[in-house]
Image 1 (cartoon, rainbow over the protein chains, first blue to last red):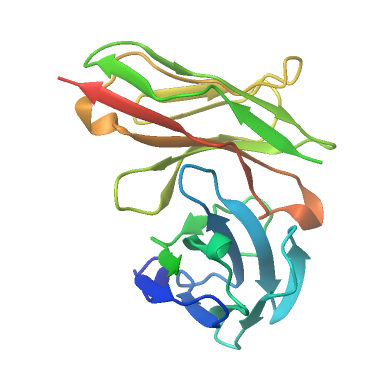
Image 2 (tube, rainbow over the protein chains, first blue to last red):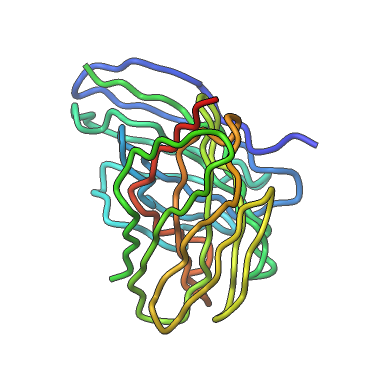
Length: 114
Length: 114
């Protein structure tokens, strides 16, 4: 049973460019969240998707947007990249039918903005 | 808003030493509490959790007790191994519609020497 998978693993972008990161949740999971983890820091919640809609959002600007597809996979888009967007982006999934279900994380996508 | 504070690291121990990593939290409601571990080059893994006051979460020799009166969830292990070297994150999640949004501490780096 595959866990949470993310792509790409690493990427380098230039300031001002746009990036799309992808996530496939663990089998049977319908809720996907995205986190940003800067070097040496704990992950920060960006947003959560359920039934193809954004359900919750953290304190991130509108440059950060997302999408969830009917198969529950998700994309994170970041526009007008800044140097400060360089971080590890983590995707997490859970079965949204019960509040007690465990949250599983992928290995992340390392984004470097130069 | 919600917040989690962990003891500052890094923590360096010899094998078989006793480990304590302190964690305190601030929350508006009655959160669930978690410890996640991040091994080098890997994603976050749930180590243990507790969902109500006085609950003790345990896994792989690690334990933490949910102390509502002191708003704490300290991680302990009686005898650490070299393989326990990793970054440890304390986290909380509020209930209801906010479940699935994790608020993390800044992480504590643990290094265990033979």
